[in-house]
Image (cartoon, rainbow, N blue to C red; front, side, top):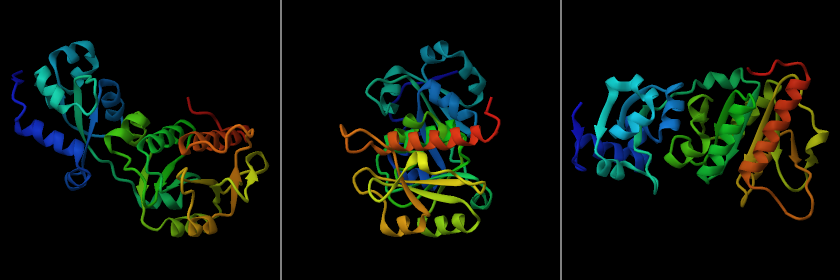
Length: 266
């Protein structure tokens, strides 16, 4: 296999553009991932279009040989150009962005909904926790970090490739539809909220709604929820960030489902 040694190689330049430009990713229906572990995780749920790696990286990760037909060898200095992080792992991939059927809104019993969570680390953490605790769908309203942006992908460790993610413009309308079919929509809030342990999800399912740490949830979203819940804490801190708070909420309702007799995954 011939090694690409030019940093101006067309395929390399295109991969860098997809790494950096959200509009380019949307137009191409592709997203960029970096690192052998993340790329292998994503390949379990997403279709790989192209892999770029140095010969040394392929030697370190034999599992990547499964994608030999889509692999382009690159020289170390070309890998440095492809790298979106300070310390490159010398493995990069382009994947097809998976689509999510809106019909899942009619069937999913455990839903995570986000509004205005701009930090990619928080969005990635929440998607990873939702996947870990058995949630079936994530709904991202306006103002959220893109689920397939490089920083979000690193934080989620590829969870967006296994958990259906639906981006919507009208989150209150989605919550109203969930509520209409018996899903209990709960807003995470600091004030005017019930302690988490006092709330039980009904058999119709639950939707946890989380906003940004700074702004919280908008009034239309709060009004679309059946109740607001808070995590009881000591007075040493006022609040948790969205990723930490949401993970606690997601764990709580996964544990409740297990106590009700649902079989644990694995």
